[in-house]
Length: 229
Image (tube, rainbow, N blue to C red; front, side, top):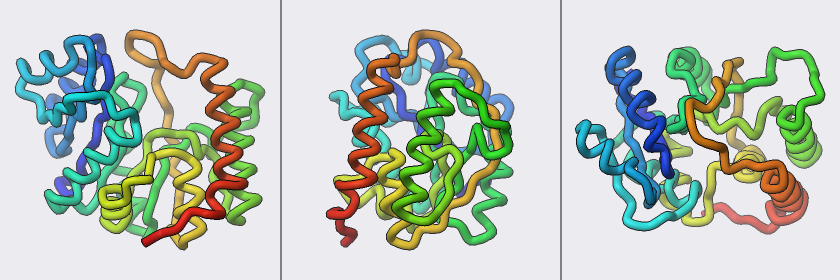
């Protein structure tokens, strides 16, 4: 799997990054990775540098979109065939990457590691939010994606080019919706997402609610005016 690059966007992950990358290096040495330090204010960069991790150290905080794009530009320039978004907080599990890669071989452009594709319905807020966005994508594209909010997504070479060279692209469900409208083929592979190793998620309930509203407006309205060069 040396044609795959794991892009690990990291902002203030000093409590997690050593365990995440240490596991990759010890148990999955065949996987290439790049930690993209998004202007962290803690010791994330210092830990990566002291351990000799593969690091792209951004001087300022760009947010997830800019941070991920920097990683995709690296993947594009280095000639990787596939890139996968991989969280620096320990929630994404590397043992699923091979199965996701196999799914890509069936001719897909994007394969999502899905928490919900094989699960029974429940009433958790996470599931509810994903279902609402999933419904919006299905109404506007005709394509069913069970877990559009999952951050564990693999992209092929063409999608790497899109994210690397288009400044307005972020790795969010509305962009996935837009790419589907443009003909991208999307599949899902069931995965289990672990709990965050340490620290607190930025996605507080009120932040999650704002995110939901923003995604719905974008999918139903803004994406109709978006263009692809």
